[in-house]
Length: 389
Image (tube, rainbow, N blue to C red; front, side):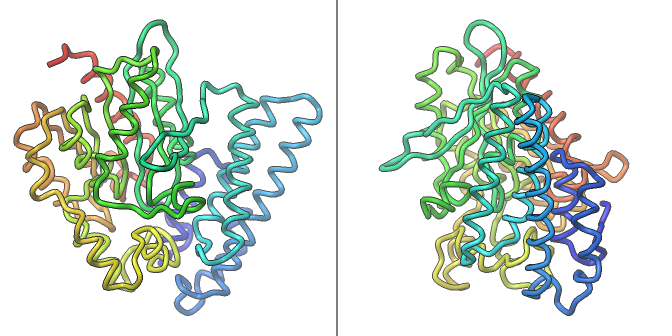
């Protein structure tokens, strides 16, 4: 993996992510170059001065690009403005992810991120609907990306993981590639991520089938969706969420774990206790307490340990794909094999572990998103093209 900041996993993966989601390399370098020395500060991953510099640089870049977008919009150039608003959204997100949830600026950055993303989608006339999904006694904000074509289309429900949002899912290219194959996508800010966490304070829970049921109930009301062909995909911590949902929500027609999560105690549980572990974001422990709704580290560890697939994977009956990188520093590749091996009742079990020869060896292919996106989109298209059971 290209590491802009040698020895600083969180910053390096974030910078690379910004490029892969659609940022300009020169702009990313503009934000990062002044941070090289800050990355060398003692315990830079937890150094408040280093974190403040990171947020400041990315916020400044986002604000600059947002102003360029606004000027394009003022001149009547909607498409150019939309493209720049997209980049501004990526840069606001990159600042927001590293901002602690106790910092009031996180809410400000999140609002700027959402606003820029919304402008980009509207100005470029993307086939996206902003909807609220009825869930228990509240609503979950979602994005629905429509595939072109007449008649009911198959669909994938896209859940997420630990530290990004439904907008990130859209920016990753997954819904676009699925749409090119005639498949729509519903991206859900479920408990533990995005607006559900940031604006509604809904922590995650092990029972991801509840979110799947809510999403399926909604999709079955749409005349443009083929209710017999609805699957689920989720990344990172979603490597637990998606298989769990497929095990208990039998209406799901297929399942993808984009990054395995056989036993979360051996992933997040290990990261929680090991200060030298590869952590996706700075301030990881405090973020984990927030995501899991935990009062302290011991409480978080117990909630983390509740997420495992040992007595669940054998209940999956639909086709299952597990994707992993052989050099995943957050979740051992063995967890991918364990998940597939245990899904003995799935009528199709596929395992793809990306190697150094291909690329995509890091956590959820953080070193090369596109290779995973292509593989998943092709797999879903093949599954949905097969005769139904």
